[in-house]
Amino acid sequence: MLKVENITKKYGENVAVNNLSFTVDAGEIFGLLGENGAGKTTTFRIIMGLIDANEGKVTLDGKKIDYSETDNIGFVTEERSLLTKLTVQEQIEFYGTLKGLDKDTIDKRLDYWLEKFEITSYKNRKIKELSKGNQQKIQFISAIINEPKLLILDEPFTGLDPINVKLMKDAIYYLKEKGCSIIFSSHQMEYIEDFCEKLILLVKGNTILDGKLDDIKENYAKKNIMIKGEDIDISAIKKLKGVISVEKTRGELEVKIANKEVAPKVFNIIKNSNITKYDVVSPSLNEIFIASVGGIHE
Ligand code: ATP
Image (cartoon, rainbow, N blue to C red; front, side, top):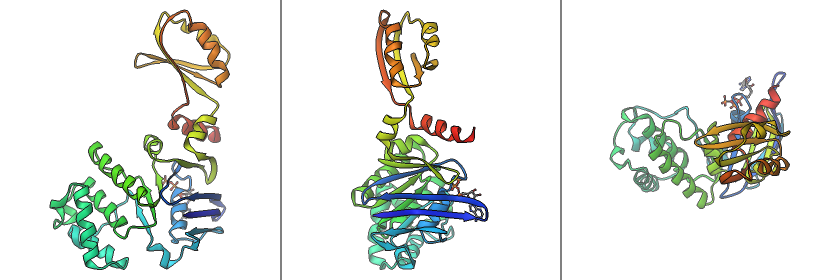
């Protein structure tokens, strides 16, 4: 289990991360979100022991993360750090050996992952000859060849087409099942919604949202009502107190409301129309993200 306790990092007067705490259990995928400059990379660097926090501590299975523990952490970022003149096999052997694995183990695991990613024929090709997406897969294999306890994924899907996103997702779920603790960071909220049971939203280093994804969505006051039907009195809905907006999207009416108490009032207006759908739903994580971050900027 990764435990981050009250970490604060300052660069001069600038507080990059302010009193941040969270835990990631074995087999859990945790989302760390935030707009550019929110403090995500700083947090990753502290976790990996690359920089020190001014305050707080980070432990992995109870041990402070020092040089020996960093071998148990895998890191995938969108900036590629591959040795492009090496072949795929040479590259993975290089990283695997650095992490203390013998060549046989490395080769067995490499074959397994090349097969999973459907790129077995690239084993002896130079990295620089590979497409961006395939380089990303090799980067991923480098990060997990030592079967780390903790895997940090920073925009791992960059450059991947939908089929390869699916392969990568399957690989991440496989590692989760094996008990790896996973931190996932992406600006694409649909991935976070897909993957993460728990998350934190950072705004300028401060924790703005924190908890289980379902709870965050449930507790978010604003709701959306999706309505399908004919003869709906849109202007009457718009006039209701607590109605934020009414929009038509893909043949449905989307009514954004300030809280769930407004929903019966909307229903009252449409109940005599010819309705085939009336659904009160929580907004998407993307909407919550934008509203939460926007509120801080105002
Ligand atoms: P992005 O999504 O753009 O990668 P981020 O959430 O990873 O952003 P960080 O890189 O952690 O954000 O930056 C957090 C804050 O710390 C920013 O204000 C940034 O300017 C500052 N910062 C980061 N690294 C340094 C550094 N080495 N020296 C001074 N300030 C820094």
